[in-house]
Amino acid sequence: MKTLCWLLVPLRLATLFVVTFALWCWYAAGRLIRPAAADRAHWRNRMIRVWGRASLPIMGVSVRVEGTPPVGCLLVCNHLGYLDIPVLASQVPTIFVSKAEVAHWPLVGALARSAGTVFVQREQKRTLVETSKHIAEELELGSSVVLFPEGTSSGGEQVLPFRASLLDPAARGGLPVAYAALRYLSPPGFPPASDVVCWWRDMPFGSHILGLLRLPRIRAEITFGAEPLVGRDRKDLAQRLWEATRAHFKPSV
Image (cartoon, rainbow, N blue to C red; front, side, top):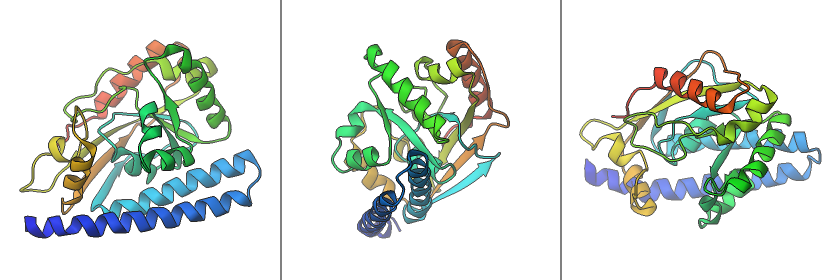
């Protein structure tokens, strides 16, 4: 059985590449006939959602959703690794906030940049003002923006404390912030999701994704909060969002 699972890896990699390239070409062509910024943002977000929904079955991922996915607002979620991107994108037409290093990754960085990803250098506070401005502009265009306020990924055992800095545009504008709790389950007979699905600590990306693609199936569970939260103080807002996310959180197994 496990030998057969390894045979899935090259097939899945090839299919992911073909599907991603085809959708990127479709997306690029669509941008040419949409001169207005809002129309281009809507088209981009829609295509990210199409890509998320197309890529998950290829990787053997099924998604179970509780609650109603938000639209056109800032969404915070606990962070478990790169698989969070297609999982959340499959449910919400959105762009993402990511650490700056991703912009320089081979192929992945180029795709992330073309998908409108907002890159942030959290260790350089002077860049946070520009990042907050970028997030605010996207929200004004009607985009949803996904932010992982833990600042790093985890093994899914707990929700790490939320950092408040990137919640500044929402707090200043009194904008609603939705929240979601995410977890993964690996199939019986395989290592726990914290070891083979979550990407955290110093796990090498190449060997991790090859191991993930050999899993016959993965289950993702997302719980969306019932009501967005609003607050004028970003630290208080971060604390309330953390508590609300933790209340819906279940560990990855």
